[in-house]
Amino acid sequence: MNAELAALLSSQQAGGAPVQVERLDPKRDGGLFVEARLSGATRWFSVHEGRSQPLDPDSDARLPLSQRVPALRAAGPLEVLAYRPERRLVLRLGELGATSGLVVLKGYRKRQYEESARLHGIAAASLGEQPLRLPRLQRVDAAAAALEFEFVAGRPISLAPRHADQFRRVGAALRRLQAGPAEGLSRHGPAEELAIVDALAARARAVGVNLPPAHAEVARRVHAGVPSHGDVLAPAHRDLHDGQLLSARDGLVVLDFDLLCLADPLLDAANLVAHLKLRELQGLRDVDESTVDVCGRALLEGLDREADVQYRERLRFYQAATFLRLSLVYALRRRWAHLSPELLELARRCVDDR
Image 1: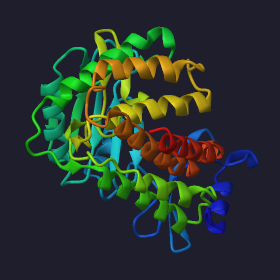
Image 2: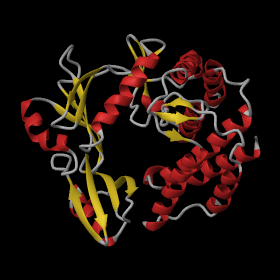
Image 3: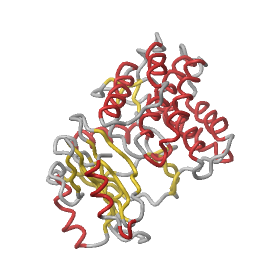
């Protein structure tokens, strides 16, 4: 974090309390987006070529929905659920706890909302209503480049081993998704997966993030471990983690199919299992030392891919790639940066255990 940004953040923090930087998002042009908690509220900033400026989800020129926020806020209760500057804005409209009238608006850049709506439709048709469904898309707002979804009044999926059957249902749903239509979906094979990791590492270094000393060696070994049978592709969520899964009154709900693509049928499961281990390291929610083994096994049983060619080699490769990526992601999150070396070690273990 440069001196100008540090001074800007400190000047806006009430009472001189320590600034809590939540995440850093390196940009392709060498700049940086910063998300921080200041005086109890989330704030966003941009850093580029040594200069810093505050950002506001009410006035993001790249996101048409942003221009409507002041009017929406004046019309009734509004909460910013997620904001990625220049990329995406997610709002909840309505009074939380109300029996009706709540909706979620997801705003994109002008050219992205139609593709996101298309991908959502493909996934929703493939999964149906059980054992896992998507939030219902209620309206496409072309002028705001936004999608309006039902608000799902659910809670995060339990990670306790006693609820492992939920993960078995998730695995079965992934198998159902993989049998769905593949036409018009982009390819995401091992090369594309590693390219994302490499790009993230380059951006982290460009903004001065100190990666664990073993990063280069582990990355080299993950690259060398690409499965020879890597051309088996099927529809995949591509960003499946526990934060995308809700337990609602009418069953399990999965969020955010913006990255739906053709990928290895083990990619989503590997990513989800890796995140279970991450939650164990973080000590969050209802995880214990048997969560990864019990819930992870149930997930893979539901997926039912163990008879596939090079099953173990492919599973371990994608787990290794996920841990390698997570080691970079969490190096950019100040609260959890201390986990980066441990996540990198887990990537190494997955490479060794194929």
